[in-house]
Image 1 (cartoon, rainbow, N blue to C red):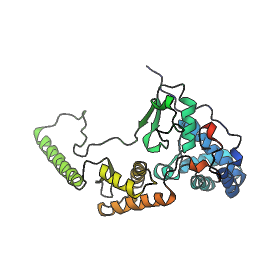
Image 2 (image 1 turned 60 degrees about the vertical axis):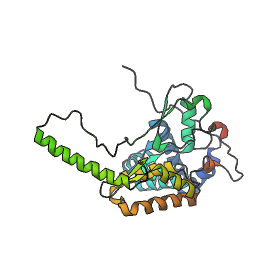
Image 3 (image 1 turned 90 degrees about the vertical axis):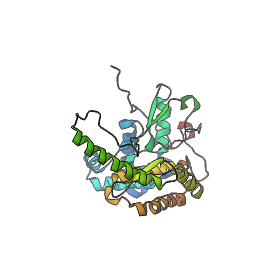
Image 4 (image 1 turned 180 degrees about the vertical axis):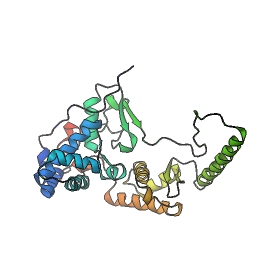
Length: 294
């Protein structure tokens, strides 16, 4: 039996300019030396747990507060986490949607650390921040090794999933099951008819049904919000809806929710590759180490 592929890394490049980086200095100014130490711990956690990301929640705050000591409470650690996201040490959208700490720079470094020695480099699509076509993000000699895996299994809205291990049922049960399936098919079909074409994505709604998002919708929003990576933001919306069932939208309010989300990202300038790590002159001092600081 083949050994499971190791995802984390044993080291990561520690830039000599780390403590002069504007984002890191702002964290240190806002939260003090303890905040700076916690930020380093969080960056290290991303590399050591999964190679390029780490899930981090309230229980992790409790565990880290015990390790940091010195009267450092879990609530303070969570404030530092939010501050790191706000200062773009980590991607704020992905953290809000999935509770995951990662960044453009962390992913660049991870790819360069392991890309030369592994035949297959796997990323979760919803967390992926690199531009696969950009040589600065993904070198040509590594590009064909990158595999994107979705954390959301693909579902066919017109064909509900069946359990192949289900025991044989009597004819009456099968008739009832058939009627239930027929009802579900009609429900999905009605939802699909409201879209111009078969949905590329589906946003789960408050009542458990789905709002379909078609290629035509994506193209329309790309024209309206040119600074935004539309598909990446849609995946974030899906993750947010999965994680916040009490705040899911109704069918009537879904479109307004999507447009508000995209408009907010447009106002922020969208997902600008590498910009977050650049200094005031527009020059990235960490380019040779894989692009951005984190």
